[in-house]
Amino acid sequence: MNIVKELRKSAGIQQKELAIAIQVSRPTVSDWESGKKDPSGERLKKLAEYFGVDELTVLGRGASVQNEEDAEIIAMRERLRRDPSYRLLFDAADNAKPEHLRAAAAMLKALEEGSGNIE
Image (cartoon, rainbow, N blue to C red):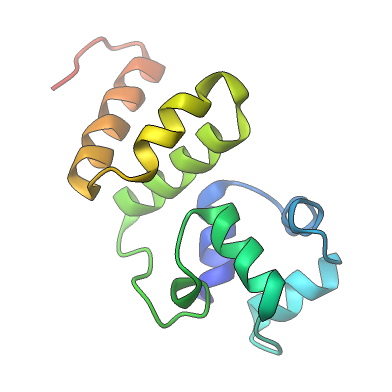
C-alpha cells in the first residue's frame, strides 16, 4: 500500500478530509496514493506535518508503519493533534520515544474500552 494511503487510513480519515486539511484537491490526494504523482515542496511539508512524520517517510523512503501497533500510534497522534484540549499531551508525545508512545496508546485504549486494566 502507498505510504500516503497507509498514513491516511491509519488516521481514519477520507481523501477529501486530507485534501481539505492540506489545501489540495481530492484528485491530487488520489494521484499521490496511486503513485501517479509524488507530493513535493510545500505540499510534502504539509503532509509530513499533518501526519507527524518526516518528509522521507511520506515519500516512502523513511521508516513506514511497520505494524498495527504503529498504525494505532499514528492514529492516536492525529486525534491528539486535532483536539485542542489534548494539545499539551500531543506536544509532549511529539518528541516521545516509540516505546513510550506504545505504552500511552495501550493505556488510552484500555481507558476507552472501560476496562480499567492498565498494564
